Length: 305
Image (cartoon, rainbow, N blue to C red):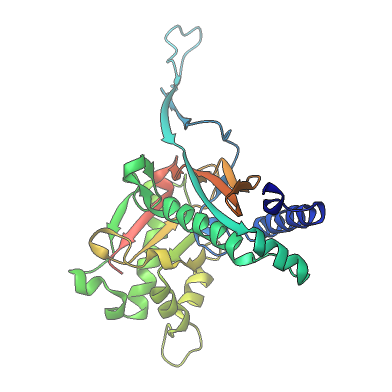
């Protein structure tokens, strides 16, 4: 009876070509629908065979001083490195295509059902996005918003209600944004200067549609950008209620792949179909290691807005 369970040569070629077509399309849409890919740099240089990734942060110690001729008391300097390790985890799912699906598609001269492949891809992208932002404590993955080394401050205001942007004037909202940028620059003595601010959607809507001053067409966002032209302001749905106590908050940071990144050693991939009963099962795989923050002082979380 096995002859009834096998595809003929033409059907096999058709199936292989359709899978190749789907794989090409999957890479065209990788990371596009979700915020993590545009807000967090991606590092894919780690070998996918690794279980962990380790990086070293170096610091210099010692000072120089004014010396006299023939001095024999020159101060010494040194470089010290501290190593940090981040876990890497595999992500997997699969989709199934029956023999009848393949034959019906070939008979109708139509492509195989894209929704199955898209569902497998989207499920992995959704998980990657969550890992990038929130990590997974059970599997030892640290996310961007769950990184305890990034400085966090409340927005200005005497209490929680006064900190909300819905209760503030346009000038006070502007000052929250400007003060956060200046704080990073001041706290690092000019070493770090942020180039991006990310807001929850609601707060971004406020600054992009509210006049900075009555009788003008200039919004809060436009006024801010005129004073801080090197700072891009954008939004992400993931920031809504994302901070302790379910608070909204903004992230002010330096978008630089040398300062932080999400580890993706293996992007979405599909393996050869596996024959099971009257269908082919197509396994899909990727890897993620959360978000690594090497220079936390280049960022600031401002909560309660």
